[in-house]
Image (cartoon, rainbow, N blue to C red; front, side, top):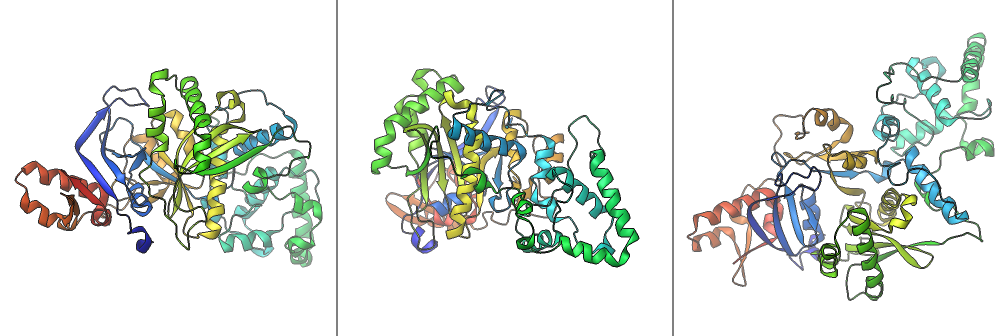
Length: 517
């Protein structure tokens, strides 16, 4: 990465001190605080390292919230797409889109709000980390209460229609051992808030299922010699199971998204990946339509006045990127950089997802869509498409395996929906290590600002240790800060540079050029 990325160094202009401005979440007039810099140009590796230290870009402005002072702390959140399993609400959104495309059906009821706030059950069921904790053995002699409960939960969740449809535990064991998601294993469902369910007890089941289980266990006790034989029959390879049993395996995210449509489908949806560049003919030809959609979205959804969503604002916010387009032999075919993922329905753009493709992730920047199609829950649908897109890029570029969703704001109810895309991690604001979100939530319930790293001795390993090695761009010359500071007499200069070095870390401070005038 370094050999081809180093050809175009990042050039940034740091703004000394901290900015105080109106918070867009709690509406505090001066409660939001951050540090910021203007990126004249930036390599994708530098930006990757910056967002792994809590930075985020808006156009060419790159900012980092002052986490222990800002009114609504913003924690960087990333999803792990390789283990991602769509929740019930996610599947509803995908099926809703398929029905609309196939038959033109428009579902009634709440639209964008419906899947945004996940149930506790969905949040837990989609946590692959809990699945890995299940102790499953294909041996009845070691069958314990925990395994019985997981089998009961499995039967309840699968909602099988016939009593002879079974789960083959060998397939589950192989998937768990390989680290791949298991489609057939389910964890215990969590209680809905206020219901006071006991997680130590198995979930409630229908009387028919209870009778089935009792009969099965009774038969096992009466025929010890046949225990292993009967259970091995359940553990046979999937190729030996009936077609009906195989078809009952939960569909993958890709299966749900790319399910085939009838030839006479009512609508056609096409997703196009377009580089953010006015030199790109496709970006240029679709600019006018994309801009009109942005204005319609901002005015309808965010109630922006027309003068605040003009072409200048649109270009600066969503079309100007500091990221230099970079291509690597081992990188994705589309290259690295900033892109618009356009959703074309019957020949017109109904949504645009602004994304950055970086060395280790796809980073979501913004989404705007046609409010007339809010019934399709395009915010959730586009996030699921971007997760699937990350998995696709991973096939060619193995190190690209994360989906960054921006900031998670636990104190803002409208922004907590990002926590439903599991498994996911939050970035510790002090040591910059990733911590599974389920470990962070109890602390966030008690305090808006939290250090997620539980090791009190842990420190920021990437912190600035040798500030004199920081690279400065001054009077058209590049020099180490150790040389530059000998030419300066302003005492405030050193304070600003050291603050910058501490925020970007040692590695970025040595690669990026800090512009000084």
